Amino acid sequence: MNKTQCTLMRGGTSKGAFFKYEDMPKDKNKWSDFLLEVMGSPDAKQIDGLGGANSLTSKVAIIKKSDKEDYDVEYTFAQVSLTDRMVDFKGNCGNISSAVAPFAINEGIIKADGNKAKVKILNTNTNKLIVSEVEIENKQAKEKGNTYIPGVPNPGSPVYLSFYNSEGAVTGKLLPTGNVLDSIETSVGKISISIVDAANPLVFINADDIGLKGTELPDEFTENNLKLIEEIRSIAAELCGFASKDEATKKSPAVPKATIISMPNKYVDLSGKEISKDNMDLVVRMMSMQKPHKALAITGAVCITTAASIEGTLVNKITRINNGKVRIGHPGGVMETAAKMNGKKIECVKVVRTARRIMEGYVYTRDNIK
Image 1 (cartoon, rainbow, N blue to C red):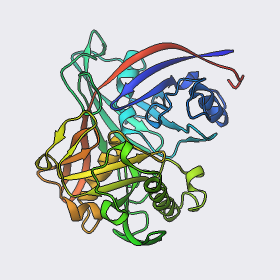
Image 2: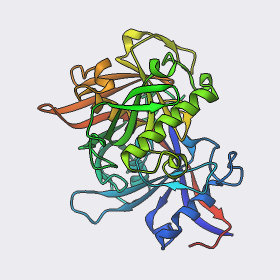
Image 3: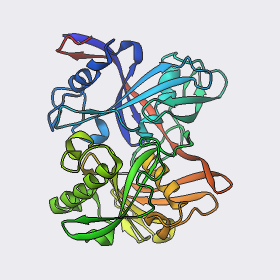
Image 4: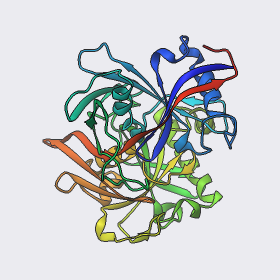
């Protein structure tokens, strides 16, 4: 067996294996095989690896000190499929991003003095800047605190993430098709969708158009619901140029991300708490690797906020940015984003997360692919 230094971190509502760049296989062509072995994929249970049998816990971050003048660290994200021999490096994960600065500080990749650190992160998947603000205690990232985020049972020290100039993160275009609305033919007839690429590309779908209320919790989606949503997502993947609609599930499973939207409406979240429609600006149900997300991807929240500012998109028809803020109702509760505007253009979108180190040590793999 081969052993590789590894740290298990929770970032926001996701969990992943964190590696230093120098500990990864020297040949990048072997990264996918190595990470599949680490996570125990392909296997829906991921019983023989670190994965938690859920797309939210089958994630990887690879970190190195940046030699570029404008950045402190460089971070590559990987989404490891549960059931296929596939690792997707196309997009980023905002939740995992919240653990990047704490990891880099704790591992000594960058030094932090004083009570706070501001870390400039280059996400290599999207070639975009993320600024992470972290509290420091004894030269380590502080973990204890009083900040709660929906979807995480325990409080922690706040991590503020600002996503800068997020437009065209994967496709190179804010509107990958050039349109604020696209009309597509589906198995249930013609519907309108909006595809927006900011932090990650999302395809927005009105709940009414596919027979949903929009307030469903993850276990309320039927197989027919999921099949139709994936059909629409696959059409959007083809429109983005990622893969043909017939091959999108296998070749581009992580992007674009299908996102169901609806008007504000009261619902009961996963913790059993009733959420008032007055506490939100829209309701969102997001998909992650063909399954309903139990919370909301941070890159999704950035994209939703951006879409709200674009006249004519499906999101914009429901809500607008109000005093720079958007309140997004999701299965875990309500997330608020703050947009810093430069005229009519969004300069950055800021969110608050928590993160912590769960385990550090070695992961053992069978194949000699170092």
